Image 1 (cartoon, rainbow, N blue to C red):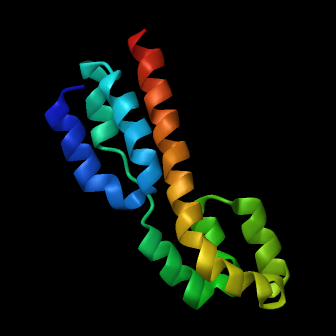
Image 2 (tube, one colour):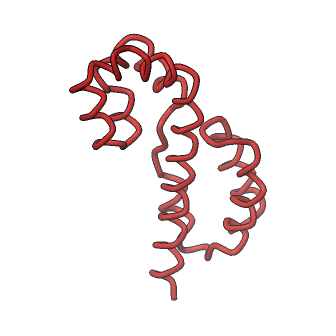
Image 3 (cartoon, rainbow, N blue to C red):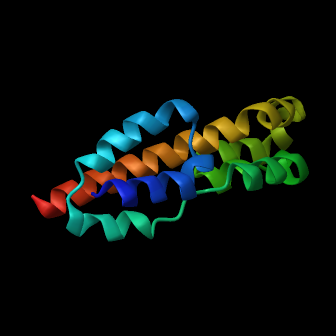
Length: 119
């Protein structure tokens, strides 16, 4: 992938990932074949801000966990009414980091699929 495309990707999606992950992502993108870059450029990532808003207003129902992709934890959180309120409050602090980690896992899957297709 070209440097300009990498910079564009990082600028447009950088807020969706933790700062420590950006150098590793840049390295993965440098090794990505040109023909695979369009799939990654059109990828959708979850907004940490949206996850936080969902956590604040609907966290006791587990909606924030469903949004991030943690379906099993979302069901448990729903059945326990947010861990009797305690889990809901903890998620207000942790959900943005969990969203960014889930985005990074999604990014890695896309890069690995792209490398597999081009090989």
